Length: 275
Length: 266
Image (cartoon, rainbow over all chains, first blue to last red; front, top):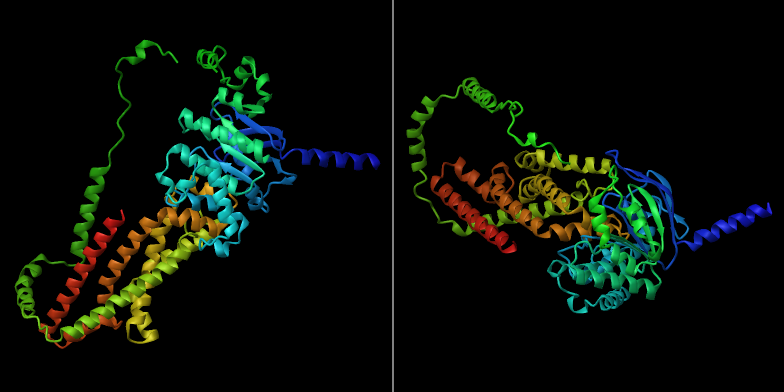
C-alpha cells in the first residue's frame, strides 16, 4: 500500500516535471501513410528543443499533434499533466502556441488585429466576434509588438510586410496567448539567412527570459546546434537520436538523415560534410 | 537511378486513348433535332410572325412621359424592394454559409443540412415564391422583397461558402491554433479573408434583384412592374413604353454603377 502511494506520487512528480509528455504516439493518415511509429519523448519546462530529421520523418506531424491540429491514432500527449483530448482541446491550445513556416496570418487584417487573435481563447465569443477587446488585451499587444520590434507596423496590413516581419507577427501572436509552450514548425524555412538568425534569436530569448518551453522543427543542422539545449533526431516516424548538441556526432547525423535502401549515400556524405 | 542508355532511343508510344467527343456531339445534335420535332417548332410560322411582330412593336413608338414623377416613385419602390431583398439574403447567407463550408462546418451533418437548405432556397424560383407570398401577405412590395431574399440567399450562401472553402487552410489553422472557437474562427479567419470577393457577390446579387424586382410586380408584388402590368392590360401602349424605358435606363445605370464599384474594390 505504502509503496503504491509512493509510486503514484513519484509518477505525478515526473509528469509535473515535464511540460510535454509524449507516450508511444502513433499516427496513421487515412491514405495509409504511417507518419509516427511509436514516438516517446518528455520535454522539460523552459527548455529549448530542436527536432531534426529529413522531410517526411514525421517532425511536423509530431508538432501538430502536440497542438491538437492532428489527432493521434495511438498513444497519448500530455501537456502539463493534462491528457490532450477533444474536450480540453481549446483550453490546451490556449497555452500551447504555434508558429508556422508559412506564418499563417490573416493577410487582410492589421498586424495588431492578428496579434489580438492570440487573445481569443481568453475571451468569450460574444464581444470578440464584434472585434471588441479589453484594454488589458491592447496592453498585451503593445508589449509583444515592442518585444518583436514591430510597434511602428501595428496598423499595417499583414500582407504588406516582408517574410521576416510576418514571422515576427506570428511570434507576437503566440506571445499574446501568454503560453506555456511555443511550437515552431520550420519557422525559418521560408526566410533569408539574416531573418532566420533574427527569428531563432527571438525564440531563444523568449525561452530564456520568459521560461517558455520552445520546441522547433528545423532543417538546418548548424542552427540547431547553436540554439538548442537538446536535439531530437527523427527518421521515418521514429526517434533515432536524443541528446545535447555536443552529443550530435557525425555518426548520429548519419543515422538521422539515413535514406531507405541506400548504404553508400554520396549526397548524404556531401551534405553532412558541411553541417 | 542510371538506366541503360538504350531506353533513351525512341520507342512505340502506348496505344492512344479513344476520344469520344464526335460521338457526344452527334448525340447532342440528334437530341436537339428530336426536341424540335417533338415540340412542333415550326420555323415557317416564325418567318410569317416577324411581320406581325413588327406591327405590334410599332404601337410602342410614342412613349407617354406625362406621368413621369409617378413612374420614378414606382421605380424607387422597386429599387427599395430589391435592396431589402438583398439585405435579407445577406443576413441569411452570413449565418448559413460558414456552416455550409466543408472546411469550417462544425459537423458533417450540419454541413449537409446547411448545404441542402441553401440548395432548396436556390431551387425555388423567385416568381413562384412571390406568388406564394402575395397570396399569404397580400399585394405590395413586402412579398416581393421576401421572395427575392429567400431565393438569392441560396445563391449568396453558396457563393460565400465556396469562397470560404477556397481560403488557405493554413490561415484557419493559424487562428484555430490559438484556441479560438467556431464563431471566432469564422469572424477572424473566414470573413476578413473573403471580404472583397463577398462584396463583389453582394453587388452582383443587388444588380440581379433590381432586374427581377421589376418583373415581380407583374405577379402583384408592387412597384413599377405592377404599373406596367396594368397599362399592358389596358392596351395603353404609350405609357407602357415609357415605363419600359424607365426600367431599362435604371437597370443600365445600376449595371454600370456596380461594375464600376466592383472594379474599384479590386
